[in-house]
Image 1 (cartoon, rainbow, N blue to C red):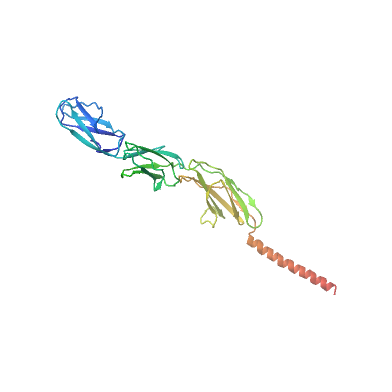
Image 2: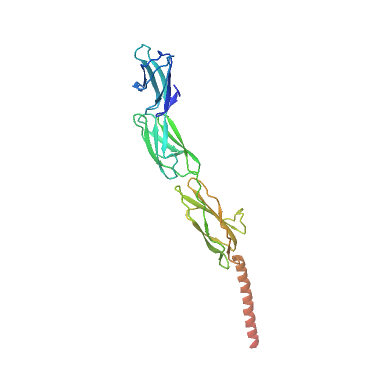
Length: 302
């Protein structure tokens, strides 16, 4: 028997030797049922045949070869049948509903289905031949591959490696700001916008803003905005010259390239600190001027 273990709907090779030469009366059964294989032995009394395992439960199953014209006795070979599972579609998107089908489990048994370490199904039950069908929604996870595991209460386990799509989102297009000046004094609100991209698994964006250069390292606190769900973001910025870039990440963890806005923008002329210092100086000068004015007036009327 090749191989000695198999799964339902798989093909095995049955080999026999020591039978009468050129004999056409060899019958082969599987678990007592006729396989309907057409077998003719060779001149040396051997034969080879292929057989597709029917839907059947896990465990040990038996082939038996019988020569109806000779009293050869029972000639048997055992085959260990184990479980297997398949998924449709085989490469689903994050959030898609998939159908998991299993064969070769224990009969009339509850199946536990896990996606990595997450229970994802309402425990389907196998039929009399150990088959089941279950549905679940693919959870979000940034890993490139995942393992689906189906286990029955008898301890039979089958796994399926699930490859997720590996295509990165399309490149973004920075829209604004571009070569603009926002305000004259103090901090200003700046609205960043870029083109929207879509992906069946969902998309989030990361925005980075840097003052003075395009290295983006190190970034000042608050200048990185991850997990943005819309193609825009509002930030309050202190006066200075700024550069900004943005990229997209889909639900499978695929990332687009960073896209740098080719045009820096300006915020204000003076920071709030210098504006406050200027206001204090102006107030002091104003007070001196007023006091001098009233001193002159008082002296004039003496």
